[in-house]
Image (tube, rainbow, N blue to C red; front, side, top):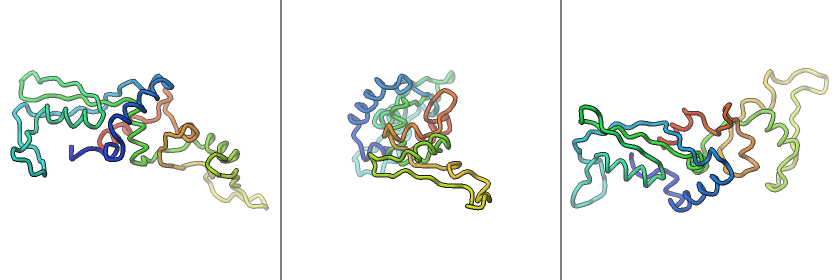
Length: 187
């Protein structure tokens, strides 16, 4: 919880919420909340590791964590343990919020080989990129590499609709798998 995430440093919370709302209208999965993380917080408040020069130190408890999560544009649900000594906080985010975070931090994602090949052959005139053709054989027919030129390519995540279609998606058509979502939530 060491300070606001990178997304909050470069984009206001209102701007993130507006982008999430617009994305939700275009993509039904954009508004769905993915609950991928659980935090365990003691019910007995501890002093927060706050480096600011406040007169009274802030206490680290479920309220402190909830403020940080809401400030980062995340969703949460809190439950008390049976013993009453811990609070379990489920942390989640919408796909739109995860995409925004991935764009801000230039999160590396794998590109789909077939879609990348087709896009490269067509070029991106709106980005001043001419068509690209990369052969994998020499003029005399010998193979240059055991890998095709479009395999194993990663790129930074961008929310540009022309680029989003190039990323590998899972079987449900989602942009990020559970491990990638955890990485994005942790940042």
